Image (cartoon, rainbow, N blue to C red; front, top):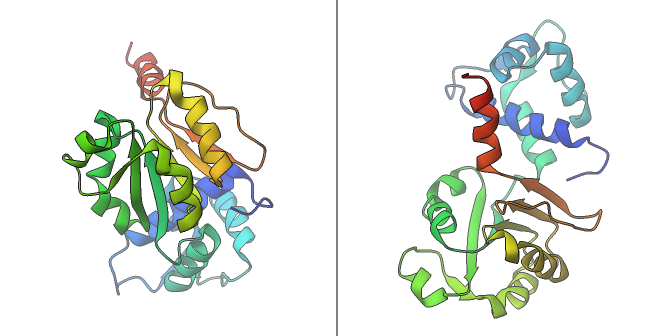
Length: 205
């Protein structure tokens, strides 16, 4: 991810690309900022500001060429080739994510390998190769992997995070229920399902 683009903008760029991917193939040559903004749930002015980070290529009165915009977003998000990812912690949640490998592949991501304290047991449950934790650092370095999914218990999360960063990981999707301490150059997205459910419960009282 480029440092010049705000984190929230990067999130919205990814959202815009998925909105474009849902358009019927061959039927939509162009899309207006108003139409795309409505589907994405943002204001047209916000959308135009966000897309400005990808260059000026919209045409007044015509909008954006769908194919061109989709490609520009893919280039900006680093999605022009299959992005390898490693998963640490192949327990219940980790295994569920591994079984979704075809879905991730359609989105441009490949969980190339998983690492677990019980690799032989986990290997029987999924197609993705599961290796012992001792091989993690070497694998990441040899395959030049930059992204990881962390699905270990909270008590082990920081240690595993430190090992990932030391091996060269630059971005972590964290499912552990703790806030990870990482260097400024490393990006972490936290997914805490309990907090999300708690947040939703507030609105159904």
